Length: 141
Image 1 (cartoon, rainbow, N blue to C red):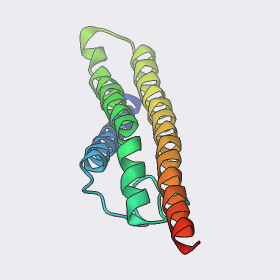
Image 2 (cartoon, helix red, strand yellow):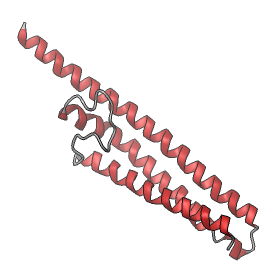
Image 3 (tube, rainbow, N blue to C red):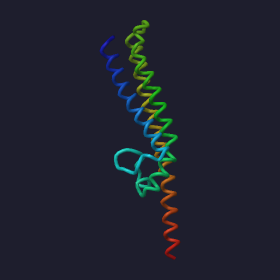
Image 4 (tube, helix red, strand yellow):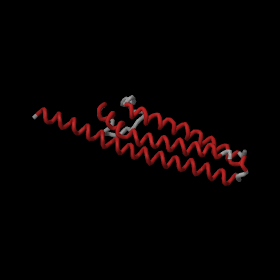
């Protein structure tokens, strides 16, 4: 195999691992096992406001994160396995094009769905925070 094809396969393999991490984060978010932190997760002003807001936000965003991870895994796996097209007689240019399309498609998919998850998480966390603030304000009156 040609060096550029191997580099493309290696890049796609890194994306594949990252997509599995996103998939795991989606499942952890849905289970509520991803505690509030400043390292991983859907971190917005509202999701970081409290543990309740974090949990509500992550449960709301989890389905979209899960979709992001599944799409990323599929696209990256296609890109990795496309590296074997030359064994079937495909040209280097075609192989590199398919690998590139798989990588770019996966990246666009991941970013789009993670942004959608962040928006959903932010809305849910904001609602929980505002409800909590409203309750506290109502109690003090």
